[in-house]
View 1 (cartoon, rainbow, N blue to C red):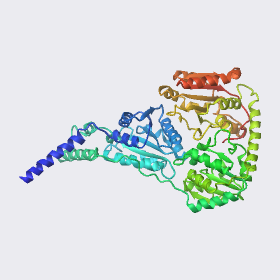
View 2 (cartoon, helix red, strand yellow):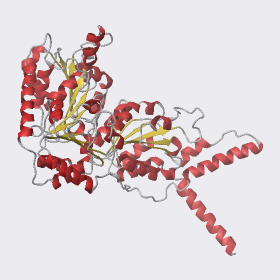
View 3 (cartoon, one colour):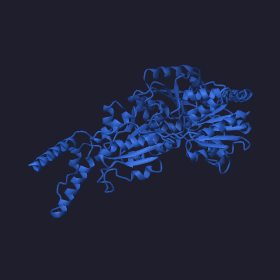
View 4 (cartoon, rainbow, N blue to C red):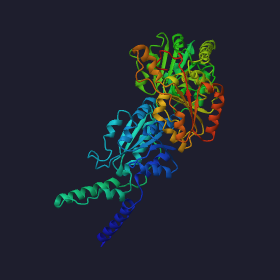
Length: 596
């Protein structure tokens, strides 16, 4: 009797489990959404596809905003920007196959920018991978060279821990992108997946029974334990730190320096150190700073410590250089611009970046694999009461003023036709609101903007060619996108996205009908402008067509420029995206230069 009672109990329990798991309307997308919400994710950027629909629907139900774009690269660029501006992991979800291949450039950009980014990708069903299913390619091989972590989910119960692990890895050490592939059968409800697994006409005999058994068993394993309660909270994040001995050695070096210089890179803005604390530390040290990447704006608009011009001359004269998250790549002439007699302190989370080209052109006095932001706070604390000799930053600032006055005189010159681009950029810089974010996507026009436009505060500027779309989700700021007419062609369709999501941006397009950054070198060296010429396209009409507000600005509008800019700002305050199509002439401001 006891045996039969036990058997009956076991059967009843099995029926309960079957009903809970195999008749449940729940799906894997809900597990993804629960983990993202627990990690404070507020946005998921996407271009919709059937492979990932359960993720998008579940996220929306939990209050995570879904922002759908017109290209998958846009979705990843936007997620990258959210990561940089918010300090959280940016999340993008795209469909299988071509949806993922379209993201490769944007994912590589996030890798190089050291942005914590989670890419969620659809995939063919687990049993159909490699068998010619719709949009089935080897996605893992594509993303392993680009991502810190890649995983393919093989059962519904593994979703939560895989997403938690990926989010922690994205933020640990040197931040970067991570990728999770979700086969379509791990995301949809059991009853729908089981219909697809069913064999309508199985082979007869033993082979038919084997096939039917295998499919049934695979399906049960796919959903086994799917809805058991699981921890969705964040895993610990590891951030490397300088040792006490390293900090003390640097304190001693800086205290003896007469002409120190700090080169601040994007890494200095990474969590966990608040940017306001870093700014206070820099002001306490009193050391002149050159700001690059996301650190632009760290010291505000008019700080006496922020030096914008004559960097090479300052580095030649400096007796100590602190590379705080800055890398000796092409931007520092691979280290050749550093004075060999200078003491050099290098701080970087990534060992490879920390020592890049140190075997050739420069040698660090102290090399620290650690977080630059927290290092600066500890350095400032150790040097409390000590400050840099005032005549040093004052002399560099005087050089700044002289160079910028010369640049301003160039802005007052008349070009052969259309408007002087330098004059336009100066007017925008002077009229831009204090809470503005500056986004730049282009070459020649953006290169000029980098010299002229001054970010208003920390994390208010991203000046990277090919990086766009940072404004999606940040509608409480005034967002200016500085475009070249070449770069605009890649992404003008996103004005539809801005309109649908009521994202108030102002796009300033420097329209010179040319890929000018390339032409500056190609024409004098090779004697031809082949493939460099564009047209003075009516981009403002394109913006109108997508529901935005477009305005054409030519030389005849020069006296009205201030009023046009103010009107554009008014439009954005009302939630409307605007595009200023500015016809610009040629200047020799950046003659012979192919990089900023």
